[in-house]
Image (tube, rainbow, N blue to C red; front, top):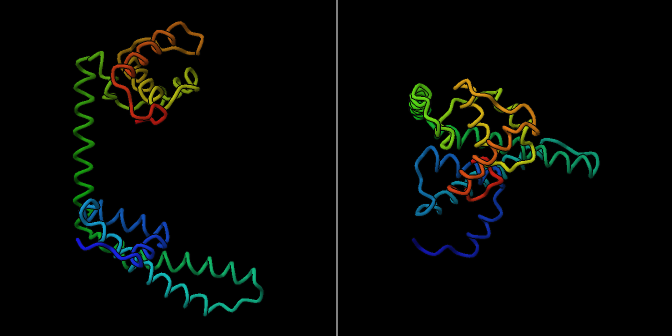
Length: 207
């Protein structure tokens, strides 16, 4: 790949953040463009959309005469948002064909089914460690218990705690009702042991 000019890099840095993010999302997640080797293609598509948005916004502004400076500023911002939406919906999103969407929906449905089958098999076998991999069906009650008992804990702890509580509900085992419940300390020790065994990159994130 030929080195990019300073002018090209400057143009890329000036792209509207929404346009840049959406161009990357569509090209990478839907069209299979590899950003490691084809970043310039992503940048050029974003630049194309940026230029079209600038042209459309200028036309919108010209069609809206302004009485004051404040009106002009407001009209400029409104014109940009309208132009950006028009360009993304007309130029970027149609690149994702109905066939692509149907294939993705079919894949996601199959994935959800396989996850549910694994959860059901683990539940039927009463695997006592399935919470460690969060191989447990989500349970709203478990979430409420965790919020009440361990509200100040970091994200990864809370994620594991919710899986553990959901498992215990599935297995008809007792769960703590308050932070002062002795069972809360016992379960917290299990969760903290799992975090030491398999430490997350960022304990504040839930996954």
